Amino acid sequence: MEPAELRRAIVAAWATATELSLNVDDVVVVHNSDRVALRLLPCDVLARVAPPWQLADSAFEVEVARRLGVVDAPVAELDPRCEPRVYVRDGFAVSLWTYYAPVAVEITPSAYADVLMRQHAALRRVELDAPHFTDRAARALREVTDRVRSPDLSDADRELLARTLSEVSVAIGADRSGDQLLHGEPHEGNLLTTERGLLFVDLATCCRGPVEFDLAHAPDSVAEHYAGADPDLLHQCRAVDWAMFSAWRWRRADQMPDRDHWRAEGLALVHASLVRCGLG
Image (cartoon, rainbow, N blue to C red):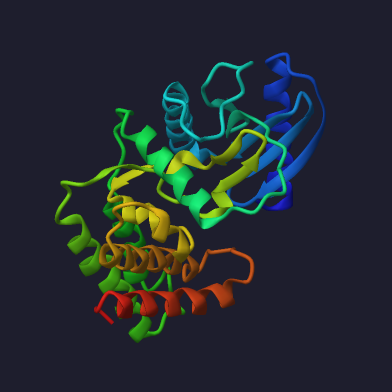
C-alpha cells in the first residue's frame, strides 16, 4: 500500500481491535503489499488489512481458516478472543489472527513435504466451495492477451505465456478425478516456523486441483519426499504456476519490488518447466 493508504489501514486495524476490547498501544508493520499484516501490541494480534475490492477474498480466507481449525490443520489460527469474521472499517477488510513469533529453524525438504501432506489430509476433511486452479489460470490469461494491460510483453513471450496458461492448464484440468482442495500457494513465504511447528498462512488462495499444483510452489527437493507425486504432472503444474506468476509481473500496474528481474526469471522458469515435461 502507498504511505497514505497504509496509514488509513493502520487506523482501521487499531480502531477495530480497540472496539473489541483488545489493548493497542503500538502497531508494527509486518508485511506491506496489496494488503498489509500488522502486529498490534501489547494485545499481540496479527491484523490482516485488505482494500475494499478484496473483501470477498478476506471473507473466504477467514472461512477456510475457521473450517481448517476444526480439523487441526497446520495453519495459523484466527485470534480466539474475537468473533471469526471480517470486520469492515473505513472501507478496509480487517481480520484478526494469532501472532506467532518466528523461530529460527531450517525447513528441510522432508519437513516441508510432511507439513504439506498434513495440510492436504486436513483439506480432504473439509467441505468448501472453492474455484479450480484453472479459473485462476484463465484470469492470468486475460492479463496476457490484453496488450493494454501488459504492453511490455514481446510477441514471442506473450505467445509462450498464452499457450501455457491455456493449453497446458486445460490439459492438466481435463482429468479431475484426483482433484482435491489445495492451499493454492504454499510457497516458502507462506510457511511460518513457530513454536507450534510449521504453519501455513495466506489461505485466500485455496482452490481445487491435483496435489502437484501445490507441490509446484515448493522447492524442487520437496517433491522427492511427497509420496505418490507424479513428476510429469508436477512439471506441467510448475509451468502453469510460473506462467501465472509471470502474467502478474508483466501487468502495467504491477508494483512488485525488483520487477524487471522477476519478469525475466519467470519467463526462464516457464521455459525450463516446459522442457522438463517435454513441451518446450
